[in-house]
Image (cartoon, rainbow, N blue to C red; front, side, top):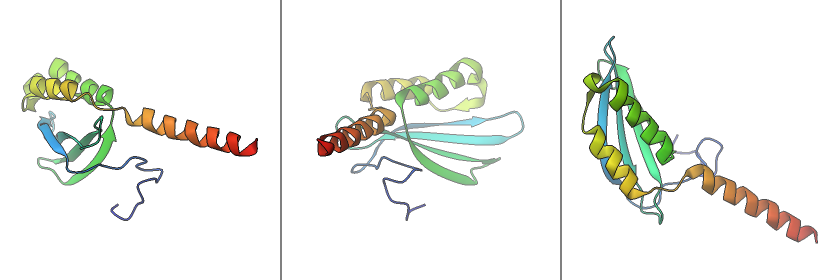
Length: 127
């Protein structure tokens, strides 16, 4: 939701600046269910990786965006490449290379560092 604050439980990181598109792939399952996945990096240094997924029967009916780690994105793409190559449209290998070259920061690491800083600040305030 657009009115959800950036520090919400749903999306504790926020996109910085304009995103640079890295590419997209579309997977169509045996039953015609479509999953379109696009990746982009934001303008942060180091950048964060954003995944937009659209799903639906025969065409995209619902779409959503989330910040993901490179490991998550590469895991999805490598599974497409290894197991479902015949059902995927788009340059999977090129997208893998683009994500690896961008070297995005893991959002879980950012959240963990922020929580550790909060704990340390609270401990410092107690002494």
